[in-house]
Length: 402
Ligand SMILES: *Cc1c(COP(=O)(O)O)cnc(C)c1O
Image 1 (cartoon, rainbow, N blue to C red):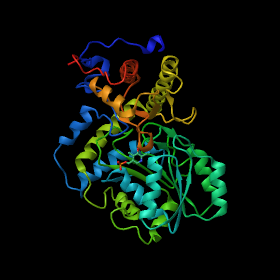
Image 2 (cartoon, rainbow, N blue to C red):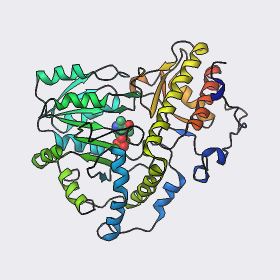
Image 3 (cartoon, protein in one colour):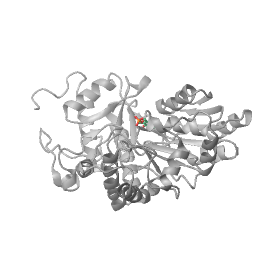
Image 4 (cartoon, protein in one colour):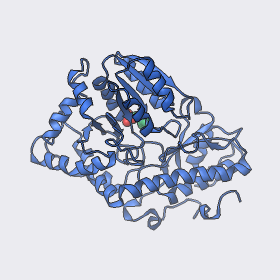
């Protein structure tokens, strides 16, 4: 058997009805544990249901109380003593805020996948002069190479993605940030969309100037909110920024935060969900949450190692060992198998996983093991994936299964 005994578990029955007790309690019923996209990810029923509370105005004591309630948990997630701003937008909105508030003229973008490439594209679209330092997709950036680039030319800001969701690679963010911090005029702008809530971000310790994340990834909330932390340097830069616009003006966010409000009407019902989820996150404990994510990433890698004996050496985790995201794994498929076909076969077995991204679409799949998923749920996904890979391509599993 290519898979360690403890990871193998017979599929309970052909329809794979979810056993609620195995799902970690009553809030994990209704089919939880089938949806492994690398965002949006599954949301606990209690967190979804929190949105049904009656609306409140966005000025006055009730919103202040809500804003107060969510701050401690958010600050813990980001590893910061600074206020965490809540934006009604997707994460891309705050990527744009990062460059509009943090750059003056010239930006260096560290690219190693689709989202880091998007960061560069946004900076360019905002009118900045953008240089790209690119490493192959799946790889991570080398601090020495970054230092060489920063010595050659002055940049106002460097953009980077902590967990590159398109490839499952985790950049050495502490080392990269420390390198950029050697250059006093250059700000560190970090997309932590699939790390915040699943891996330590440590905004303050690492001296990150702006860190952003979205609600629908490792935070396991519905889509529609984004979170950001701006350093004092970032706010000073923002105060002088010429083209920051209105909606994503970080100084305005901070002025409002001081009054426990947001500049404009926030998605109040999503904030109810956020308050509920912050309670779940602190009940679990962040260290445990990070460990759970790390265990899921290890589980994928061990599975791939074990499967390789039968499936061939091509079946592997794209990102190199030591630089793998705890929240998303990109698996390179054996020859003859394509991403879309495997994703479809998994769907027929009742599981949603992600297709490969961009140029990796044909030869990889991505498993988003983030948010509130457990190792046990992941095991079921991997069991199903093993069955899919053992079956001949094209045959699928749909016939007679329903
Ligand atoms: C999903 C994702 C984004 C974009 O988030 P939206 O909420 O869709 O705007 C940006 N960066 C990374 C790393 C992501 O995973």
